[in-house]
Image (cartoon, rainbow, N blue to C red):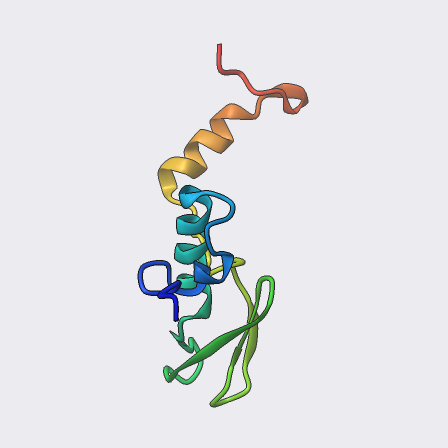
Length: 97
């Protein structure tokens, strides 16, 4: 029996097709996507992905929206906020010149 998933993990189902870079990217994304995460409500490690951007805690049935592959919400830093505010001038056109 072939050892198709020894190095490739879940991307081993692709066999020798699609190239090593695509298979490694798929493996890394699926590893992040399929992991269990801590619930922000009850703090149990039981959050699983239901659909793209929809996450559900299997312990307290809390549902929330987050990023597609990991249940984290990207927070904006004060530096990024200052750049956004500075960048939008009159008419909504950025003044980067």
